[in-house]
Amino acid sequence: MDEERLVRLVARGDRAAFEELYRRTSPWMAVRLRRRCSDEQIVAEVMQETYLAVWRAAGAFAGSAVGGTAVGWLWMIAARRLVDAFRRRAHHAEPPAAAAARTVVPAAEEEVLAADVGGDADALRRLAPELGEVLQATVLDGLSVRETAVLLGLPEGTVKTRARRARIAMRKALA
Image (cartoon, rainbow, N blue to C red; front, side):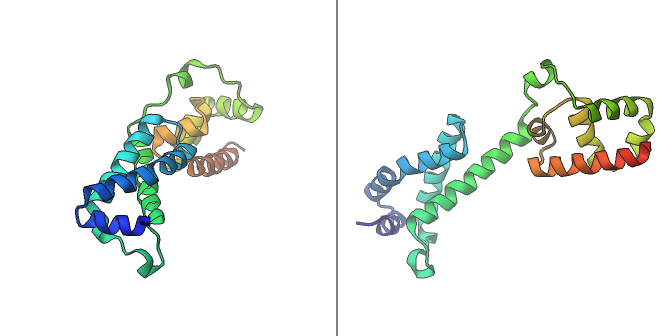
């Protein structure tokens, strides 16, 4: 019996079909999730949330009628749950304690920028707020892009873009 048939049986409340679906799909699901997340607690939570969603929503599975597969549907649920878990974690996370404790050797540009900002706080205040908070975190507080992303609840790419825009604006303001 294939996975699509198992999902259809699960939709009818067949517990044995659900157990068989879990037995067949959970090993590769865990491997795929671990490739994207090294935190075993998050992987376990996502696995549980995924299979709970499968049990509850198996009736919504359209399957091959729309060109989908049961395995693809399972992975789509898991991937969405993983993204949700990352968002929850980033929203509630504190910057790592090591961020404040470790000594960061700034680039020469950052030293000059930090010295200039210290002497001309008005230039920092003239920056757009979203640029100023990224500049504050990355240059003045010495946080990494990842730490800044967690602190501000932003994607890392957004932090990098804003940091670049902030540096350009500061150079112009201080020139």
